Image (tube, rainbow, N blue to C red):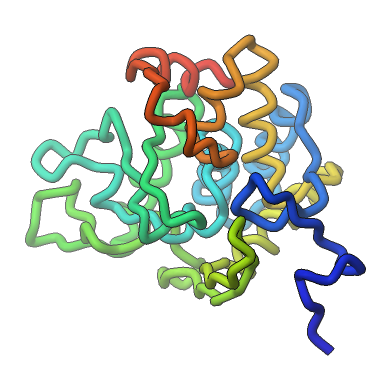
Length: 244
């Protein structure tokens, strides 16, 4: 029997000021655990180029699994030069809250992992258009992160209760979520697919960044104050580049 999310006996609790059902909190990773996780992934994963990037997109950019599964080549690369975009827009259509926000691929490890994975794809002709020199020869509308067969990850439609006590549908990627959890397990860390995102927010707060700025990155809804907050792109890039 399907549980009613409004029922107080449900495993999930609902906070009226947030637009999401509040789930049990994921493990927050310490810097040493992050380094260990990346080292183990590079050695044990069957697809280390891709998996290292997937982990870092969560840890250094605060991306959700469903966002990682849906972001496209054209979202991160400039058409003409093929350079990494200085500011990456996560389209409202791919975010859980249907709110556009920006991330910055500014951390050294993430940039290195992205370049390694793009080179891997290009050398093997995965999602490429050799007749087109734009986007480094990659098909712009292909997903950035692909399965081992070179196809996009399957998305599931799920339902939650929002702040207005309304049922809303959202997309989840159970297969990639399970794979990320396995990467944590293989490294002997009791984390989950949400650990990277939570670690990102936690580490920013530990570095002294204000709560409102962190929440602007999609970690909570502060609609009543967002119009009054001003955060420069330089400050955001600096935050992303030094999060770990």
